[in-house]
Amino acid sequence: MDDTYERFAPLPLLTPGNDGGRSRKSLGRAFAAGSLVRVRHGFYVDTATWLGATSSQRFMTTVKAVAGRRHQPVFTGTTALVLQGVPLVETPAAVEVVTPTPSRAGLQTTMPGYHEAHLRDAEDLPYIHRTRNVFREPSVTLEEPVWPGIHTSLRSVDLREHLVDTLSGLDFSEALVIADSLLSGRNREGLRLTRPGLEQLVRREATAAGASWLNRVLRHSTHLSESPGESLSRARMIELGFVLPQLQTHLTGADGVDYRVDFWWEELGLIGESDGWGKYSVAGTDPAESLRREKRREDALRERGHRFVRWGWADALDPQRMAELLVRNRVPRRRRASIRWSA
Image: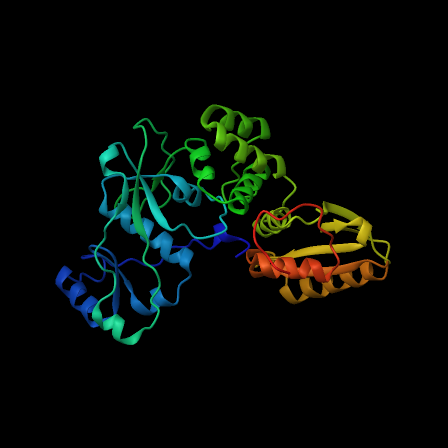
């Protein structure tokens, strides 16, 4: 889940007329038999495909279905961030759509996505995302279509519009991952905001309470983070109160080669590495050769007396696991933790 923005790939949607000419009734019968899941009225996905997909794929498929159901919807909040390629820690809980009418704001009730036939065979069916209508002023800036082939273009508010509102509704780790991505430009679209630009947005848009919290996020954000996994890891260290490492430090190995490491606790002689999904499968390279090269790199740094600790996305996602890992490697705490842990 390190490269979350690359994993929001929609599933094939079936609608009347585009599935080999099948009628609405034919798709309805397949739904009743349990072979199709209904994402929105008139929009279906093969059951086996749906059950085998990631939560992010199911979310993006739901966004496409919402786009097909509504007349030129404009997406906002974390949904807009996903459409613009900004990485998130968690899949959004709902598809957020702009509504200019305050009375229509809130979660929208949708038709049941699973038939009784599904319920007989599955104990824990995947969540089908609901739609949240978010009241916004009607003057929004629209982006270019993302998938023009689906009924209506998928459009979102401009990145800067409502960004403060969106970040204010997230927890610290989620907000820091987004802020790092925007400062570094390391996201699918290469979107970048400067630190003064982000600070200006906070001053202009945030409430007094929100500004205090967001300024804490900005104070800890950096353009040096090279992946969502690194940002999440650093957020956990901050939340848990551990001494923070230096980032992207260059160290010389026993072979005389200069190596760059993700995290470096100089006083501990400890190197930290956040291993993401694509760490050893860079385009155009052999994954096996990449692993061998990484093994040589680690051996060369260990021969200089440095220690290594590695963790993955799941470790960083779980505060307890991350805390236990840091404690085992003798990383000291300097601040009181802002989240609960018992390592």
